[in-house]
Length: 607
Image 1: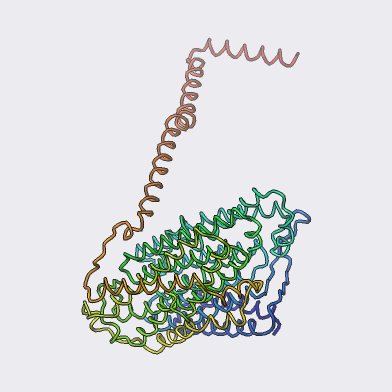
Image 2 (image 1 turned 180 degrees about the horizontal axis):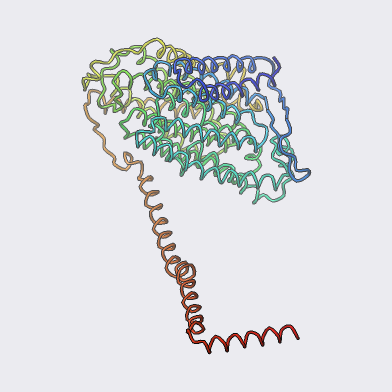
């Protein structure tokens, strides 16, 4: 099949399956789950054909949708290039493995059909973002991803915390999306187009550099929301309230990756806006550091991984702002991170499942012997995340750091090096506390290995976590294939030395502090309370809510009541007083008024 047909198939198949499940197959949960999983497998096959079926040359085909003449023309178009092919392959592969894992994890769930319909809708939405050749189409699917994530995070809607987490994710992302929409309008005003290829040709001729920087920063607001960057990062840890496979899908290949992918797609805009690029790099680096510090004091296994996702997303976003090779380095890390983060989340799901849904790592222990397959695959995923040499995470993280150093982004580079020490520390802490020592609870003591339908995806992801980087470096699916990027990958120097030093020190420190411990010897309330950002936002909302309430009360008392209630009443009373004079019951008065009326009519007619 030609690329256009394959792209349409990958896009529409999950949508058709989701519609079929919700409209007709919902009552047959077994059939629904198999149909959804089968469609995910078929999409993966199509994506493999698309990725290996030729070179990475751009192939764009647009179908008219809305035509307002010269004012605006919108179309539904696909941009099938190296960037979209690579991202589609990631989305499809992680999506299929999450489907496969969910067959075991969600087999007893009452909302199984609804869950798999949500997964299919999610894949449809994310594929639309990846294939879009213009801002309008991307924004539509961008919002659909938000709706899909709302449904999946709130899957267990009867649990208050899950319902609240879904609403929080939805509302926080709307803040970023408002900025994204404003940025799209500004880009359209500056370049006269919303199509990526036309914008790329026109951006060099934009004379107003200040307005261009504002436009890029507004577009970046969308990435701040979707990719959970400071200050809109607060929704992502709470998204752990959804089923664990959903966490793997959101944190690995879909929602949080959308912001980074969008920045890579419009990297020509970022390159043209120097101030905005520096701001993007700094926000990414700050997010990476703050998230790593918060992860140090978390005890929920999924929340530790959630903050590690925030930190790694910070790396990716930082890369998008550090130069033309940075975009490729950021996407490189996105690709490798998708595999090992999906592995870690699905591995945590296996641990939670085996421990009867216990998520506190201090109530586990000794799982290394109880869950050997889960342990070794989880260990490989951890090795990739902390950038052990020759794992995929090592190559991609070093590419980002080396690019930052090469482009003289000293501040973000220093923050990123600090994170390179913190990541091995908190991940080694997780592994030691959860998997080593003795079982601390009956649930941990009675844990047993999960079934093949759950551990097979772990084994496949473990393999990809180690070796996926090699195929990327040797024959990368890049946006532009920069020679500078390949040069940086092949020549690591100071960065590698600093990173390896951080790795050794971080792992060693974690072993020293946590080996054989039954409780956390380190207590840093500020990190545990996530710098109290949620409390600050809650207080801010209350201040505005109280101010709004007082303002509305004032308006109600002094404007609404007098105008809506008191003025009509007073008017009615005055009119009544006047008409009471004429309604005296005196016949002479009535005769006089009648005579006056007759005279007035005659006078009017004669005049």
